[in-house]
Image 1: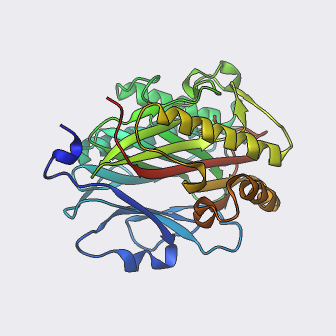
Image 2: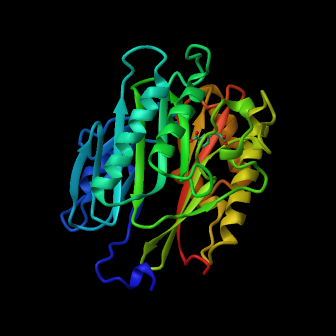
Length: 342
Ligand code: 3EB
């Protein structure tokens, strides 16, 4: 039986819209599971700000997630969640008591996050968004991103989650405001993890990149109900094999990132009959140096076409990438008709 055959099943929906229209779009028949607001706080407890400055002239945007009408909410420690029983969206923000305990903070954050998933009754992570202050700084002998990876892996292991196959789609960016902020989307069923054949799986990165590897898959496919299939693409950068390529060349890094995104789409297409296209994805483009945003946009326009829906909806944000030699990272999601291959 497919999930869409279940009468009580509520399909998950996602829409990208200007932040100013967010509250007006909610009605009682379809309340908000939550929203990610890019660049600003939203002023409501179900709107999670992504504390990064939007680049370019577009208005601040948000991704609004909606599901069933009967919402419950709760909190586990600092983790807050809202759920319709099928899907949940949650957020957590933690502040360091003292410099250098980001490993412990990541560990505590993820423990609380896993508690929240239990409370909500949605055990399977579909997508994680990680935002870390001062991501590339030294945390006392270890780069802070690497500290984060150590704490994250400890919490995954404690939760009994395999640290290899089946990790959720994710991103991890450096932000200049706020504390350690994690946003999470979860559901009743494990998604299908997708890897990129051009890249070593992140959870198999050699220890050159830190004592514990990052835990994420390159993408995740999830059935949303009503014959809709979501593709969540993790933060994608100019990495081939496990190495960063094109140091110092933001245009070429952007082209390499597009090659990786296309490779992820091709890999996803081998696992489902839905069809996704690069020029129709909902993109978030993270830019290390704001002055390079126009160059990145030019490469995207040349590759996707000036009329590409992806470019009309794309969000550009100032953020630090988790490796100091990376200048750009792109994450994406898309929903299309279709089903997983059986
Ligand atoms: C990379 O491919 C770039 O630590 O959760 C991308 C997506 C990256 C997720 C994470 C890191 C993460 O390794 C960095």
